[in-house]
Image 1 (cartoon, rainbow, N blue to C red):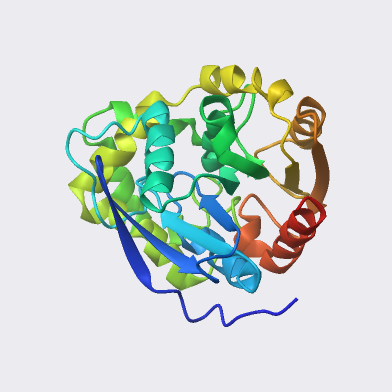
Image 2: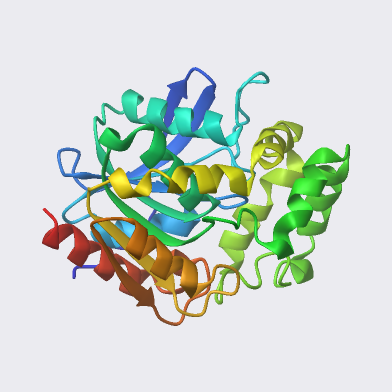
Amino acid sequence: MIVLDVQQPAMLRQAALSQGAVQYREFGPARAPPILFIHGVLANHHLWQQVAARLATQYRCIVPTWPLGAHSLPMNRDADLSPDGMVALIAEFMDALHLDRATLVGNNSGGALCQMMVAAYPRRVERLVLTSCDAYNIWLPLLFKYLEFSARVPGMLWLLGQTMRLHFMRPLPIAFGWLAKRLPRHMSDDMAGPLPRSSGVRRDVGKFLRGISPRLTQKAALSFGSFTAPVLIAWSREDRFFPQAHAVRLKNDFPNARLLFIDDAYTFSGIDNPGQLALAIQDFLTATT
């Protein structure tokens, strides 16, 4: 596989949507088959940038920073950023980029949003790739339930943001420590920076956190049996939060799914082992074209 220079990020672009502006980066030819990447809470484009750069020789890789707490542009004050609202935002983003269909790649709570996309907009999902993510009875994992609490108590997200300024806090299991084995300092700074700086960012992610519930992932799972497009479950072998049993269950619940494990990676496999993950996605797309 040809590896592009992932140290040089693609040009930052912006999609003007009804709920506000979403920034994104593109890798690869504009007319190539599109791949749309969906990250989770307190993550941004860094999660996928190295994977997208490796796939860009053959695919149009679109890497947005969704308004989930690590974004720099707050959305409109009245924006609906509940999980259902985020699914509608993803669909509107696809409209803005004239994407009738795309391969979706999701991680963490972004994987849960991909599952909800399958339920709400199945015809827009050309293929689905789920890396380690919330599913079934887990959304959020127990160790991150404090995020839901923080979103409901006035001032708690501000306090949480201030703790994220402290570099020694970030490697803790309740922060990034069990999400990524190897998180470079510049990525950590960029993911943790917006929450303490911007009340609008805290407002945005608070809306999402107050809406998440395993009821939504369990409801989405009811649609898996009727989704016949190709699905790849690319689970991190050393994941600390999402059990391998969920990966096996996802593989069995989708009619046209395959399962493989990504080595030497925690939840953020796109950061820990982007080479293996990109190769797995490329092989999957080639085999299902």
